Length: 212
Image: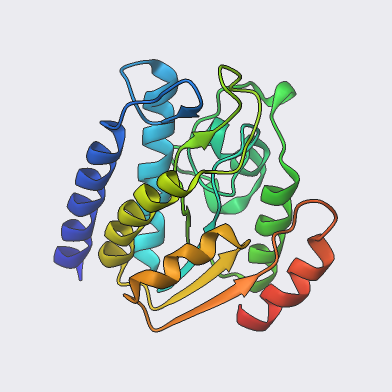
């Protein structure tokens, strides 16, 4: 078992290295690119998260659309805001970091809703986005936009690598954009769940309960 975990961790390291080499542009930011302290923190957070999920041997993937600037855009971890990292027991006693201090932690409503539901079920699946970089309005990193078709195609190729590393069996697509993953056919089942944003949190909780 230890040998298998070491092998998966090596694959995760290689995956993050490849991911971090894709350059940003004026309307899409690769959170993991570059030699800045901020990028290093996000890479380390992602690596630590993926290691923890790999050690649990969970074969479930929650797949979203793209990082938002208040959540994954700050932490490097999909569906996760700084408040989650500091306050949720999943992140305790591990090498996770936040960009802001404890008095100024960013919160994101979708991240708060999802981690609340995962806590109830005590299930911590792999979480990722169909487009793993932060799409935003041209030149404004403190905004969000929907990823374009070409971005989703690139993201699908990246997601396939991660799905193979974790030997994912079931994908829960949170939001319609994530359903582009269906074309891969490298898993056993794929289900749609409404995104919790824009007042849909109650419906999201009702739907995800059925699968968790």
